[in-house]
Image 1: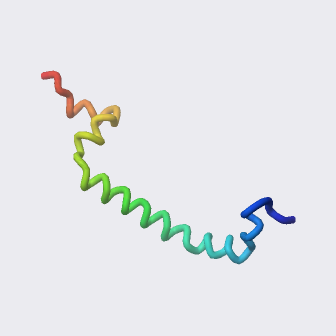
Image 2: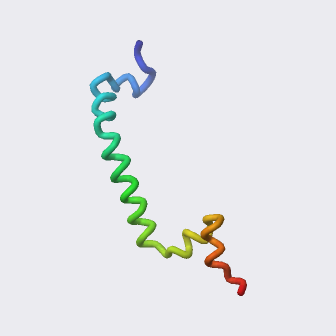
Image 3: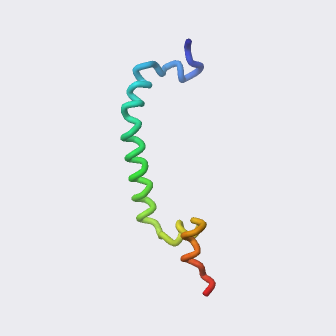
Length: 60
C-alpha cells in the first residue's frame, strides 16, 4: 500500500522515529506553552476561564 502525494516519502522507519520522539515533543510543547503563559499578563489570559475568571471581575 502506498500513500498519496508527499506522504509517499514517509515509511515505516519514519513512523517509528516519530513514535520515539513524540513524548519529548509533547513535553517541550507543554513546557513552552506554560512558559509563554507565565510571561504574558495573567489577567489577559485567565479572565476567559469560566470559574477562575470571576476573580478578575471589574464590577465591585
